[in-house]
Image (cartoon, rainbow over the protein chains, first blue to last red):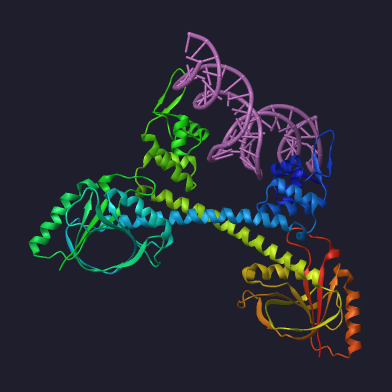
Length: 268
Length: 268
DNA sequence: AATTGACTCTCCCTCAGGGGGAGACTCTAT
DNA sequence: ATAGAGTCTCCCCCTGAGGGAGAGTCAATT
């Protein structure tokens, strides 16, 4: 016969837990002193406590544990319980996996943004851009519809996205509505799906400028980049792109003053 | 201004949750009627509620959420929080993954046992056994030491184990103590490690008998299998093996009457 | 106005699996 | 006999809500 303290040391279950298990009917002391209410356990209870510990490690609830202890004595007989528990646990861990992935994406994106922010000079640059594989939707409409297009693409290609969103403007002049826009997300690989086209954006020589601030102030940066192009005597050879390095975040909308947008104009 | 019911419908947060968030200082109503105590929210709170929903999906605690809401307005500024949360979530995920794996192992093992039990005739059989890759420890001692050997091997090769434990008895006669025993666990792959030897058990022609019941009653089954060998005029060509198809379970010790042990004797 | 039905308020209980601590006994060894 | 360690019950606490009681309010219809 062991007092609760001794039994606690033997089983590595806390005294509090032992009292709870007694109350819940999982593990009853062999003998209770009527006068003092002291609990005394015998050595049979050690084996039972071991089983409880195992089931606890497998995260069975106390209720399940009680039922299992009461009705079964062989691993093979609790297969149904085990399978139930497995599917519950599996569900939970898949959920956590998703959350972990989301957090990872967020962290990676924000880290990149910081790097970009630190490195950028906010000056007009010339650079050679590689071909980019993208999933894209081309549509006619308003500029601010692109958000829902990006999220459509995001839903279908989520795991394969590997870069920041790009809009390509096919109109020569600015159009408030009925603009001809292609919204693209860079992807690692993929195929046409549900009206979303997978294609390669041709690289080449580009003049680019990172614009810092709200989208409504983009025109100033456009003037600046166009001035440079004229100055250097370049010819524009294709539609203008905007790449959204930092816009509203996943969690916070953020401060538009810190948004970063890269204007990319193909030239020769 | 929205009443709590309207605001609840807009944000898909329950009224109960909104009241909790108010109490905890996460999301305060814009105005509270002094007389009625009715809560009224304005449209700014919608954005805040969206942020709360996002953070909730990422399983941030209400306390963290409160702190984040109070002090930050940009995804990039909460990188530390995100990384913290990621490691917490990852830890939980790994724990659940382990539990799920354990459950899987248990389930698989018990299913196999059931199949075996259903299929076995408890009669002496002749069969050809393939080579088996095992992790093994050979020692001199008592029979019942093998349990701790198996658990030693199990700890080192856990994920690679792919079959039931085997003991190989190198003594010709029965020895109470100082017996020469090799305890083996079949593995998919692996290398020598911490005194555990990885090697191939040679296959070949075996006479086998599945013994049902306690280990202490094995002798009856040994008589039976030896009689058969003599009858058929076979020669024993190597050490005898015992494979433990069903012994004490991971959770329950189970009833020894249902233990299954396969005696395997190599013959020519 | 008055009524009615839908809302909303606060307060308390519940969940799981205990932990912490108070205040009162009790055991064991010296 | 006494001290110190052990144990008892009872109550509150944690998370992130949900359920429900009982009372008070709002808005629309008669």
